[in-house]
Length: 445
Image (cartoon, rainbow, N blue to C red; front, side):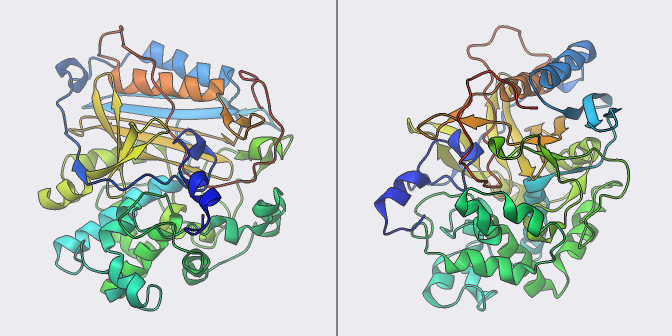
């Protein structure tokens, strides 16, 4: 991760597939580009593409591939589908249901970015101004002058991620910190300090590297310009404005209020059987990834966002201004904007975010026009394994999730496709990687 160490520079330039289990992905310097919001096929926009029986089968395929439980929702206009499969609790045999509350991880970043852009629309934040102007205590001197607010939002700041410092046993290939810190309350300033104390990954603006530190800094930026607690501000200006009823920051409460699944962490085989981390103090994630929601609420949020109900047009255009995140062959696997990314599907570009915390994964995408949304939550994480060279072994769960996503977003599109849908890169959180290799296709339960 250190700029002066060539081996760490090479490690930071892994493919986005490796980023499924890595701390960060560093791309070469790339100019900003605005991804086109192509029109979707008319049938899909009218809701005619929701094939409920096929969606049921696709969701069950995720379970059959090795996932403990999953719950999903699709919305297109007034049409919709919800589904659930597998187990919410392996000890009792309790099944999942579509309305379960769930830790949505880095989908939180989209909410935080909206709050920052709302303040930008009010003239309190300039996206290309030095972030250090508002955060001199966190980003002093030349570093604070070089890093802009935009760079925090699109992960081009070069600031390292704090997570392995916050869970130090990860650096030893051990899950010990997970249990030691289950009920720990940690302040954003301490976590930011872990990230900013590490050397810059690259010159600000000269690369791309996913960093949760960026989004804790944005939370403190909101505090600085509004004088309000950032989680309370996001709740008032984003969650309530979008009309969400089952979405919240948990604060220091380690429990999820309301119906929810147990959340199982496999840590790439280090925890066998997977361990339940549904009760966890999420102050370690804050405005970068602590939120709890439901699949239908997340769909409602992205619908409101991309239909222009949360941001003025100018700020929504800024949000969609992206930088490429290339794989090893140099081709962009996705484009990252301001708290959202875009990926290609057979029916056009889709916008949203994914997220992963200990035991809980989420994937949520919307059509560019905000007409159609898809969200899935699942309750087994880091089921993937690595080969002898440390590369991730393709897992059938990831293939099944990609097929579900394609059906959910493009059900009205022609069945013939030029290429199979690809899994989204899971960008966070990092985890120990000393698990043994596992043959491709072997499920981890």
